[in-house]
Image (cartoon, rainbow, N blue to C red; front, side, top):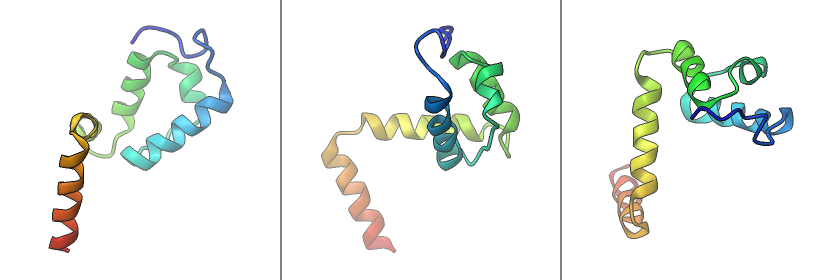
Length: 87
């Protein structure tokens, strides 16, 4: 949480896909300079929270992503099948 992105080997070419993923998952668009201004996960998370359209949205999305990542594959498939059948 407190390690510096750049000290760990990060650079602008790695920051760009990070920001693209942030936009895709959280619908939050930050300029490239944000990672330079807030190079630790803790600092960057504050930037995300400060720019989210609805307060608490990023934390809810992150919690959902964590739950999905922890699901066994069979459960993920069952959820997808249920959603497909419902629509």
